[in-house]
Length: 196
Image (cartoon, rainbow, N blue to C red; front, side):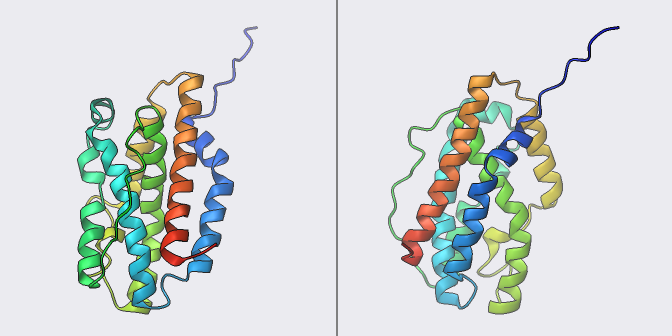
């Protein structure tokens, strides 16, 4: 009999497991921030989203990432968030880009967090529509689904990620990138909502 060699868990499963606590912390921050209680608070949330998306889209210039993700350019939401701020007559404020020195494979982790947020954005969009009267055409463009839908875009991203054949050390770097991305968005929320 040949022994069965267990296959390691896909990288996406490891990311989900190892960032679960950070994900919960983000939910707790959102509860404290109450970004959908009025348009002023929501505009602060959009500003945080805008700066996070600037961080993420800064990575789009990486030729390695472009080669690994052929549909990379359709995944950005920076311009949509900026348009939402204009709709809300709010300014984004100045924040330095946090990913200036980030390269592959850490960039995968940043994208994992950004792409994962597009799934949750379906619930946020409904809240914004119900509570603030905004839509994917005015004030909440950055929460809109991709033209092909959220689930399909997410599955394709995860497929690219899990097929990347990274070494153990490179996978560690991806997890570190995701951790840094969660921490960055948490910092942006704290800053824009003056949370301690």
